[in-house]
Amino acid sequence: MVDLQGQYAKIQTEIDQKIASILQSAAFIKGKDVSDFEAELASYLGVKHVISCANGTDALQIAMMGLELQPGDEVITVDFTFAATVEVIALLGLKPVLVDVYPDTMTMNLEQLKAAITPQTKAIVPVHLFGQCADMEGIVQIAQENNLLVIEDNAQAIGADFTFKNGKTQKAGTIGHIGTTSFFPSKNLGCYGDGGALFTNDDVLAEKLKSIANHGMSTRYYYDRIGINSRLDTLQAGILRIKLPHLDTYAAARRKVADFYDQAFANCDQIITPKRAHFSTHVFHQYTLQLKQVDRSALQKHLNERDIPNMIYYPVPIHTQKAYQNFKFDSNQLGVTKQLCETVLSLPIHTEMEEEQMKYITKTVLAFFNK
Ligand SMILES: *Cc1c(COP(=O)(O)O)cnc(C)c1O
Image 1: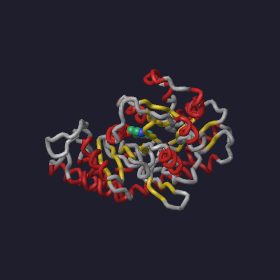
Image 2: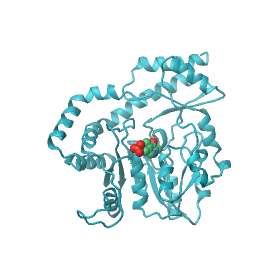
Image 3: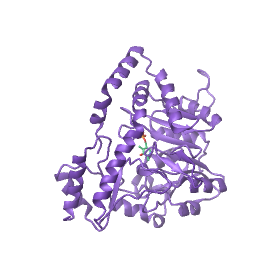
Image 4: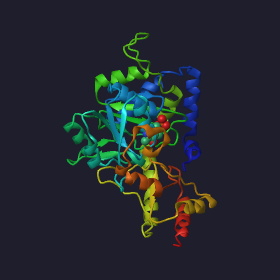
């Protein structure tokens, strides 16, 4: 699905030098590369503060702690997402409220969002799934009307641009009160282990988030609040500093693959190619097809036998997962997610794909349909 070795080979000299220099310095925790990376990412995103942490799941947890959400508060997010989004809500004793996604863009359904708001609702967590933004202008408006906080789960869409109706653009993750991301190796900006970060334009909140990620400490060994231990290693920050300048080129390479796939599948009526929302650029963390009246496991078998990696993101809606049964979600509202879980299929997409590989993949997929 990804080619991390091929990507590394192109930047190997710089990466190896950086790692060697950090080993020499032995500043493994909170070394200079960490603050340098935070400043460079903030400048790339056009946001005032970037606070790094250990992974994208922690980033979500730190965000919810920083916004002082209290046990019993309701947090609205989507049923069609990676479990981490809902997991942290449950772990903090908050109540996850799941809404459906639009069938075409696979991001938060705003009509359902509005209907799900109660006096207990405190926050909304839109997920910029597969590499494009949810409708942030609509979400921010609903949040303002109802005095709600917005945390953008931007683990999959770092670098995407959201365009407002007035033509102004902003980077994904910098529009809500807090944005969070993950630097898991296969994410669009991935390090060589675990990593994550939070973004905010709020100075006071930024200090708080920074302190929470570091045991709730203000000055050394003085604790203002209960925090956690969640830091980005200097080694990972150093690696990310080398990869960040390539992020837009990486996105362009992914988009080229997506364009090729789109064209190849345009005339196959059993394949629905991913819809691109008019208000967001797409950085294609995943290229996810929807299949119409297709035996998906037969297609997967066909691809597996021909050495074409493929994955189902995600096979089971959160609302039917065993771990979340005590929340008693209303499955009647979540039909689109259920349908997507049964019909989606993601194909390989990454920064190192050659045209020959794209041709082989599309030809093999179409052969299954006798095309
Ligand atoms: C990857 C991901 C996360 C979690 O990030 P980790 O760094 O793996 O903890 C959260 N939300 C979404 C949507 C993700 O894709």
